[in-house]
Image 1 (tube, rainbow, N blue to C red):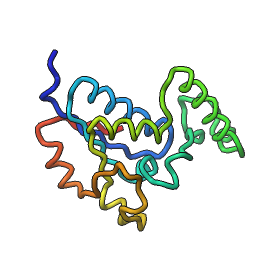
Image 2 (image 1 turned 45 degrees about the horizontal axis):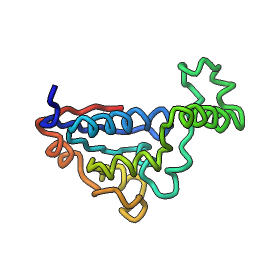
Image 3 (image 1 turned 45 degrees about the vertical axis):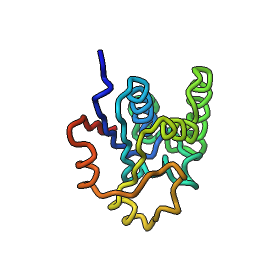
Image 4 (image 1 turned 60 degrees about the vertical axis):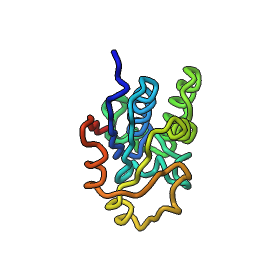
Length: 155
């Protein structure tokens, strides 16, 4: 199947390990299939492209039913860090890159990286807060224009 004329735009809105990786994996897969891919980072998903936060994204342990850990236990000091280390170790064994490496790899393939203007303004940020690979800070309307004719996926 020829997917080279297809386009996907992925919204990353969560700032947890399990909130960021699905969008990165999907964008990487799209680029590998020759598809145009654009990532739109909004709200806490901005951490994935933020210079100071990108390397400190953790697994969300409170209120995450898929972990099968009681909410109260997930809130204990060190639980999130420990679960993050376990996940990172498992991903390393599978040769899945860290978030900073993955974002750079995807950017290097020609995928677009965009920050949501409303979220950037809400959190008092500007372009200097983000990594080099971020193409621009855009409005939702600009994102829709870019996504037009393709698929939008919200992770």
